[in-house]
Image (cartoon, rainbow, N blue to C red; front, top):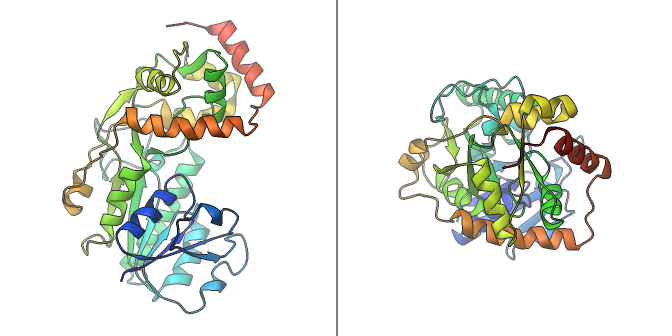
Length: 329
């Protein structure tokens, strides 16, 4: 039986991967702070370890694993820590990076693993890239058998959002308030349901041909933000009013929107997934956007019903931007 350790395991993407591993018959352990252990499926071993501590992996003792899946490394120092911790203790180390590493504006019509990297608009993307490079150096030195995975926008419990955080956008939709969209809303964006991501992800470490390689795991279907947001509204049984404002104008109002817009959502992202499909035989995305959003809308409604309230200052700012720069479509 394949022994798999997930570092993380309860997040938007990793939870689906844990479920998929169990379905594949793996012996699954999850290491995290234990704050959300009730979310873990039956049959998963919960190991408590705080990655912010001096010895985050102490609870593992001398255990070894066939596969270690790292969802919680965010900079080069984290990568160095993991190299020291898992060298000689796993058959494969799968690092979950991000499509935020790709340089903006995107150089290729379709993003492949060879598309230029180095996203100067995103500190998160640059830090993930530093992780990749540190880990691949260890791979090339024969110290750690590394596979890199780059997800893009992957959803499960949070409805896709454009300018605002998911819960805030959902709150505005349910309140009947207009929704901000960057630019004309026609940039193309790729959404992948976590269940589809997990299917390919687990398939990668069931294959022996993935060590030393990098893989995008995304859908190949891209839609405009206008279409996406209207479908999000449809999943909530609402018609939504979209208000288009140039990205540069939005960033003038709120500089913190620069990274998520200029460094991510404002640029079209359409992927070529031939590399992962060449290794995971028969893989394709099966969850339609309509079905995925319907499932996710249930989580969104429940989260708001539990008492969520948006940041009132941010909401007032959005209202002001709309009143001053609205071009309603």
